[in-house]
Length: 244
Ligand code: FPP
Image (cartoon, rainbow, N blue to C red):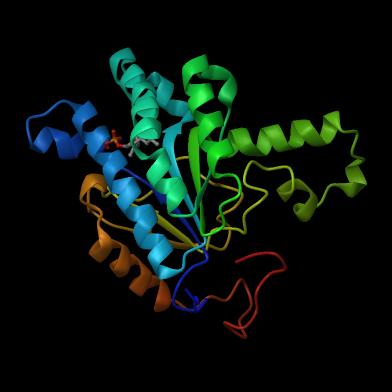
């Protein structure tokens, strides 16, 4: 599908918040909300792909989520395995390339193997790239990029924005154009701090499991109504090099 960059963002990033409250409203355990959240995510990938979005990046587990009750953490890790076995083939057939971003060292072997399988199986797909941020934090990303630069012996005078960007976890993607957060909170919560410098921000009270095509279209309509200036008062035509 041909994408009009003024109407449809190339890269959408989403904080999928509100699973717990969605479940609570139904007198169900929080895990039930996360399970519905996976289904909402798969629907959202398809809807984004249908509209010509090329990159979708979602926050599935933050560096801070380890502070949650152990039962919820193991539920979320188990859900990775369920999600991969239930949806990987379908997503692969739809042309979805899956990438996992975040610190994999802290997850167990089974989860790591599931991520590896998801990435390997979909590596050659080109329709849309779904990046799942898992054990990810925006500050972690900046720190790991700096550490890589030092390890690779980069001289201080050679460190600039483009160079550091190339070492971040999402270096293969353009910067997000549209940042969506569901669930009613109005904050970034240590998601893509470096990458969203020029993203349009969109917050909705909709709880993530209820986020459907109509909700996505409302976010895209809000995006289409924004004038993007990238710091330039002369308006919308200007775009930073390599940015979105
Ligand atoms: C925030 O809702 C959501 C999360 C911490 C997890 C998001 C995860 C998914 C949507 C599914 C997992 C995805 C994969 C790929 C396995 P919350 O629990 O903070 O909700 P609340 O604010 O209502 O309590």
